[in-house]
Length: 184
Ligand SMILES: [Zn+2]
Ligand SMILES: [Zn+2]
Image 1 (cartoon, helix red, strand yellow):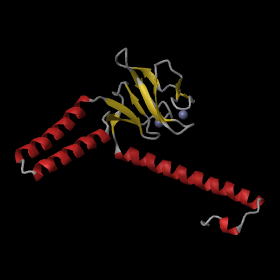
Image 2 (cartoon, rainbow, N blue to C red; image 1 turned 90 degrees about the vertical axis):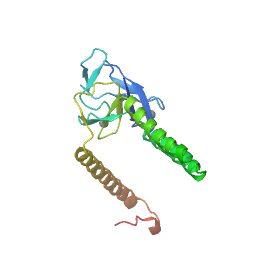
Image 3 (cartoon, helix red, strand yellow; image 1 turned 120 degrees about the vertical axis):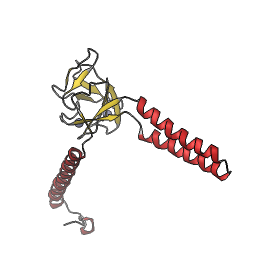
Image 4 (spheres, rainbow, N blue to C red; image 1 turned 180 degrees about the vertical axis):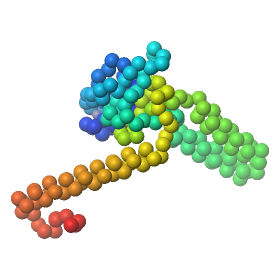
């Protein structure tokens, strides 16, 4: 099993292999050692699979099941199909046009049904592969919205904190008035 996450140190997306006994994941870019949230992994239904009780990275217990299918790849297939069918349509190859459109739609569908599931954290968006998904549900917009608003409030709060910290610095140093923050 593995986890794809945004490294808190270098802010790059990285993937790391994990075992049931693992206590940390290592960033491939900066070698930062990110400790795994306590009690996040447990034994699963099969001996080779573990269950995920909470997010490995941020400890959030809310995760959702999603298809391990690259949206970019899906869109690329549709785009290629659209381009080729437009060329065929331009040349009055009606039968070929429909065959291309049908073929690309079928290819998308087959690929989608072949790929497995992964677990994604609502809070930090890390993706965990190769785990038991039985104790989790599919995407819930309400839960997603709650986490999104929470993240927005936290971002606002950190900006406010930064500004008040900045104000203290401004008080102690002389800077031209044109550099003062525009917002009051
Ligand atoms: Zn890193
Ligand atoms: Zn998380």
